[in-house]
Structure formats: C-alpha cells, structure tokens
Amino acid sequence: MQYAKLRAALATNPQVEAILLNDGSLEEKRLALRSHLSDLLITVFDRAEKLPSMEWILCRDAIWAFRNLLSPRSEELAGYSFLEYLVTVLKARDRRRKAKPPSPGFIAEVEHLIRGISGTAKVYNEKAPAFLQYSGRKAARLRSMDLSRMARKAARKMAAYPCGLDDHLLRERSTAKLAIQRAFNITDLEWNDWKWHTRHIIRDADTLRDLIALDKDEYEAVRLARRHRIPFGITPYYLSLFDPANSKTYDTAIRAQVIPPLDYVRKMRKNRQGEDCVSDFMSELDTSPIEGITRRYPNIVIIKPVLTCPQICVYCQRNWQIEDVYSESAILSPESQEKALAWIENTPEINEVLITGGDPFLLPDPLIEQLMARVASIKHVHRIRLGTRTPVTLPQRISESLVRAVTRFHEPGRREVMVVTHFEHVSEITPEAMAAVQRFRLFGIEVYNQLVYTFFNSRRFETAALRQKLRLIGVTPYYTFNTKGKDETDTYRVPIPRLLQEQDEEARLLPGTVRTDEIVFNVPRLGKNYLKASQHRDLISILPDGRRVYEFHPWEKKLALMDTYVYTDVSIDGYLKRLKQAGENINEYRTIWYYY
Image 1: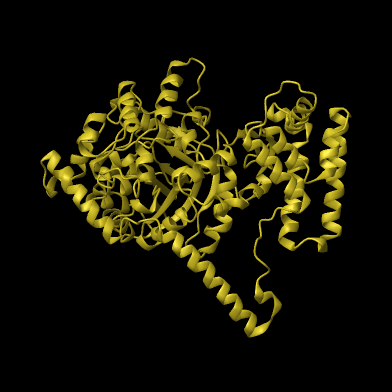
Image 2: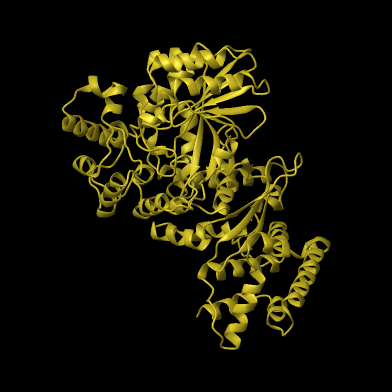
C-alpha cells in the first residue's frame, strides 16, 4: 500500500518519475534531476505568466528545496541520502527486494514536494478576489469587505480559547480557589502571601489527586517523577487555574506545562542513568566563562543567582540543572555570585545583564535589591533585564516592596530596568496576573513576554488570541521560541513549518503593535536564529519517517568562521494527525507543507 501511494505521488510529475525509475546509476539520476529542476526554475522565471503569482512563488520555493535535498553536502551533513532512499524503495518494490517501507509522513512530503515543483499545490481553492477586477472606490469597498471577512474568521477562532478574564472562568476559578483554601484550612490572608505558596508547593501525586481530578497516566507520571527525583512542582495559585473535574476543556495547555507525560518521565530517568547522555541541550557549559554566567553575544550576559523555580515547566531549557523545587544547592553562593559580578565589572563590553535562573524572584526582597544595586553600580551596564515567571505562576510575589526594590534602579536616560515573563496561554491571563504586570508598569517598567510554541498552544489563532490579550494587560510580545529539540519533550514539539505558518497566516492578521514578537530557534551554544529570515537555515533532508532535517547558520555567519548546526524536526504528518485527534480540521493547515 505504501509503495503504491509513493508511486502515485511521483506519477503527478512523469519526468521525475521516469528519472527515478530508469536503470541509470544514482549519480546519473542526481544529475538528471538537477537538470530537470534547473529547467523548471528557468521556466518559472522566464514564463511566469503560466502560473498565478502565488503559485509561482510556491513553485520556485519547492524547486529550491528539492535541489537542496539532492546536494551531496546536504547528504553528508544529514548522514543520510534522501535520493538514495527514494531510489532504493522504488527498486525494492519493482524487484521484490526487502526494504524498509516509506512512512506516511515521507510519502506526504514527497507528494507535496512534487506538487510544489509542478505548480499544482492546490493551496488556493478560491477564485481571485473580486476587488482585483476594479479600481478606485469600488475596489476599495470590495477589498474592505474581504478584510472584514478575514477579521471575523480570526475573531471567531480566537474567541474559542477562553481567557482567564472571562466571566465564566472567573466564576469557576473562584470556586476552585475556595476548594484549595478549604483543603489547606487557610483564609485569604495566607492565600495572598507569596511565602505561604512557596511553602506549600504541590510536589507529590497523592496531594495533587486530593485537590484535583487526575487520569491514571497523570497520576503515575507525577508519582514516578517524585520517586526518581525528576523536578516537579505546582504552586497552589496556579493549581487554582486548573479545571478540577479534568473535563479536558480550558486547562489542557495549563496542565501540559506542569504535569509531565509518562514518556517524558521514563526518558528523563533513562537519561540520568546513561553515562553518555548529554542533558545540557543548549551547551550552556560551553558558554559559561565563570560559574553563574552564560555569554553567547557580544554585549549581554546572563547571571543565574538561583537555579530553581516555584513551579517547574516540563519543557524547561534547564531541567538538567534543577534537582528539586526546594534544592538548597540551587542558590549561587555569595562568593560565586560576587566573582560573577566582578567578571561582569571587568568586562566593559557588557552593557546588558539578564538576571534569570531558575527564577530570581524566589529570593527575598533584600537579596534582590542587593543584587540589583550591585549590577547597577557597574558603570558600563545600561540595561538590566529580569527573567521571571512569577507574574504567571505566583502573582502574589509581585508585592509593593519587591516592585520598589526593583524599580528604584530604573533611571530613564541612564539605565533601563525591564521584566521578561512567560505567559504560555490566554487562559493564564487572570486579574491577579494583570495586577502584577500593572504594578511594574506604574513605575515605567516595560514587561515583555517570551512564549514557547508547543503542541498545546499551536492550534489556529491560539497564540494570536494570547498576543491580543497580553497587550490589553500591559505586556508586549517579545519572542516566540521553537520548542527545544530534546528527545524527552517530543510530546511538546511542533514542526518548524507550523511556526512559520502561524506567523504568516495568523499573527500577520493582527495589528503591528500586537504581533511584535520575533519567532526564533535557539541554537545550542550559538544563540538565537531568526526563523522569519529563511536565509539563516536550509532544508537538507527528509528522513524515511517523514522528519525534516535542517541546517541552521549561526548569527555570526558573516563575521566568523563558525560551525553550522544540524537539527532534526518532528514530522509534519505526525503533527497533523495529533491535531486531528484533538478535533481540529486539518484542511485548515494544508499550506504547512510549503513552508521550508
């Protein structure tokens, strides 16, 4: 069946099919395909009138992608030949030899690649917009009608994702909060005390099950995580955002952030037992000139005074460094912190310091103020950035005393202090979170958001809804990160083409002040790669299981002779199947194949 589907996909371009099925050598086929693609490219450029403009662009991009897949350099980097596998599979079928059959994902990639180079992508089902046939006021009115239709569709999609400021969620969460307060036998006085929350972080499966409904896998995952010392923790406040009945509705993305999947726990346990496993996915040790410091860029450093958080995100970049929510070794010693600060002081090229971790707001106010004062005393530092998730997971922490301790070092014209937080879903935006943000804003402190794009917030217009609400509560969208490519977090990963599609087809419909974030791939050891700029990466292969392989170029590529980074993505086909299981109409995602 799979062989027949592959042949059917190739049959849509008889010339490509004939080249692959002839008796020539692999290199002869490579040359013939290159020649055919070159001819196609010339035809596309010289006789563009044969294709509508948008199909012309898809065709051009597909030809470039196919040509790159045939490159011996691409094969060397990927450690695998797309062409050789394709030919081997076809020969194995024709000659009845054994060969690993192509996956549905591989066949789908080939099918869309062939459609793309042939100018038959069939992405555009509608006729050309009516306004193109007119000019002047009539064209403007018809265009305005089209824009209104687009806006209404986007609004309907975004309205489907409940916001934590919606009346019905406010009522449900008020009830959930009261239930947690009764369970702990506390009043609002304790609930509004951030230290009470940090003393009562939920860290085991039985306590969690007593407070909310868990399915069997959730309970077992938390139980095993605790048993094998895999970091896990949820603040009582954040737990009040859950659906206590676990009806799989508004809290799916919230649960996914903190309740680890079973396969994650098992892989983390195996990783820790393996001698050859490298848990430092971002190679931070290679960019740490001194304990507590990370430096990947010329003008900015990260200092990490504490390496734990009041709440642990499953997909955390630094999960390899976190032992436990309450780990005493998580705090950087005063001696090491002073050495790190002295290193910054003796490195005059540094003019921006990001204080993160972990979460620095776990420290008491006097220690935070002391650290801020020490950084502010360094003359060449003119920007201090604070990375914290407490406005989302523990907004009670953003007290007046903390805000005063931080904001007094913000001096317009001389030194900027800014806060970077991490809202992941529109359902996390609550009155408490909004109040925490506004406390900073009242003192002129900008608050920015770094979003991690995962399967659980990747449906159509899901993050667009978040951006809209973030701006309304005073948060500026800053970065959208592609999920780290760690094996244990495969459940969370989304194909890069989906992130590109989201930016082009959903975020693009929002006003510029709302879609201010930059989509990035954080390359281990090298830093951020801007995904909007296609010249910073190349598609170099498609594996038999349908996963694409990319080569990423470091930001220094025109400044220094650096190594590139080869990354294997998750399968588009597998991602779409998961969306379908979640109830999505995957026809709405049909253009995803043509983002390279």
